[in-house]
Image 1: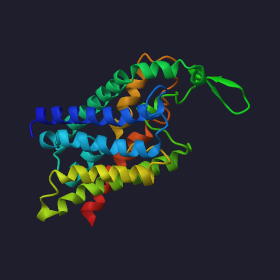
Image 2: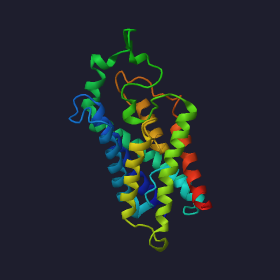
Image 3: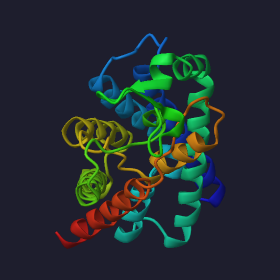
Image 4: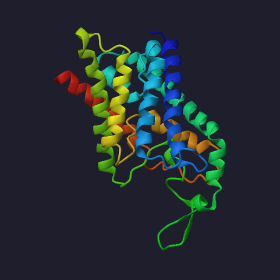
Length: 261
């Protein structure tokens, strides 16, 4: 693959991944969306289909990593040249940011309606009365559309959760190469990977929202911080390193496990 192949495939594939994945989060979250309150099943299957679509689009061009954890895992295993890693990672981050902007454009009216609704602008906080979300130091009311966050904020547990979930993902991808005499699963591999992502979301996604992909979280979080969203609240940068570092460790760990066993 040439550098231009990697750049084009990873940028477009990751943009579509985030457009569809972030799109289902917006559909379930925002007022005036027909899918409002569709729930966790909709989110997990929406992200699975997002992976399937992005991987199908980019597979024949760049190999459809779409995820720095996958790129690092493949580099450690020897399937990807380390010299290609920077362009993979840069393209993935760019694609993730483009995808997040497209989610905002698609749901522009819903974002405006949601973030100017008095029930959202002034959220209830137990018996303490009304709290102005504009002053919230951490997660704003629509940050979950763009990036992940923990249900229980515990650094060690949150980090371990992301490491475990990403290890499962990357191991599942690496072991595809053991099939068909070492030739892998071909186009079927995208479907298997998508189903693995659905499984991870259903089984391991509850604690942190299963980033399992550094740019899936970082790129949209940057976009959230920059977009002109009214009353958007904070971008929770104090948590932002966990969905970056955890998946990278998980990707490398999966490769070492694969090589060892």
